[in-house]
Image (cartoon, rainbow, N blue to C red):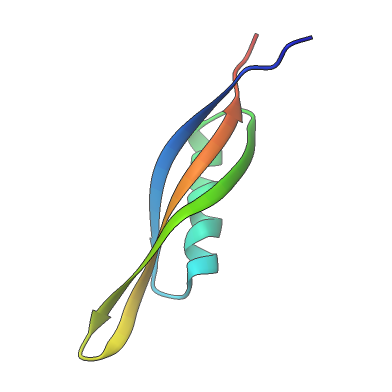
Amino acid sequence: MTTVARVTTITARSTTSFEDAAREGVARANKTLRNVSGAWVKEQKMEVSGGAITAWQVTLEVTFVLDD
């Protein structure tokens, strides 16, 4: 049996943390994509206002297995 997967890039933002942004991104991808099997953080970015961090953003590469 051969498995074929695809990778898609998504960006998620949180006002709490990088971990929360990643968690929300994977949860959202799982609503739209079937067979999500993994994700890795490609990029992290923070938004800053007045010297304070106001948001955390991650760019995720999400892997999902294609249906037969």
